[in-house]
Length: 197
Image (tube, rainbow, N blue to C red; front, top):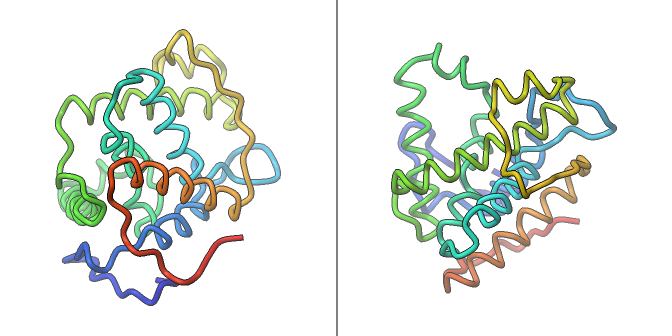
């Protein structure tokens, strides 16, 4: 990792995980495998910030730690990339187990329980699907009817216009959200010396 950390992918340790590495990696991982319109890919970092925002919109009184869980919901992709769900299923249980171990290490690193409660997972998934609806219709060439069939309706009182950001800006925005949420939790792991633009 750019921080100098070495992460054992088969046995990931929370001590080898840094938020700067996550933000850097996710800002360079494209949603929809980059098959979107515009000058910039819609990054997993930007997607994660939107999902956290939607979670807070759906449940305004949600605790900061669960908002942080929403921000980190795809954090494992900083190491393994963004794979579409059908392909994950085709790879089988070992892939899902690997992803779960990495997610647990990430959660522990940032003061969250290794696994989120089912209600929180459901809420994050709902927000994730709402974001995917907007991405599909605005960036990936899906019509509204197809997006509704695949992802369901986003919250009726929530609207989003997506402007994919350059990687550096997406990275900075992800780190800003992390700092705000970790500050609200009273948990701020020491930042590395390198910074984003």
